[in-house]
Image (cartoon, rainbow over the protein chains, first blue to last red):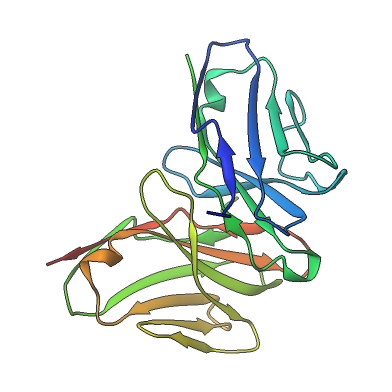
Length: 115
Length: 112
């Protein structure tokens, strides 16, 4: 299955710890998007990255959150000093390129629980 | 600020009948609209889309209608099947940005 892969699928962290969420895009896709789904809400855009570049991070909280998409390896969404309000499902999507940003394929998500 | 709204959190339909899911948006800069289907514990799956230059797009049992003047779109599923039971998200993209704006979803249950 060459779909978008996310790991871990479930992540439990205590308040103050760091959470690292990984996303491997579909083969041939160089664009990655991160979304967060809070309970009872739709998906909210967080950040859009190309390899080694952040294109749009307008949806990212200003503190504690960061994202990267290195030349080699998966995209990482990093949350430092997690708080209970960070508990959510985090979805990654990938697309082939800028002109194909309409075609976003989603991974299965990582469910983060902060205790 | 919820720019894409799905005001019906849930919908139940008898198998074989038509399912109509509605979506409203507020931003006139949106020029591309999509519907995603989501099963529990899975990521959203693309279903159908429509560009703002069209008012209708059809793909098998799925048809999306766009009414730009009313800033409203709808997804019709005919005939509905039990396997269609899922959460349906409406999404919109602006011609000035890279991000999708999602509605809060409508949970469709098709009753056999």
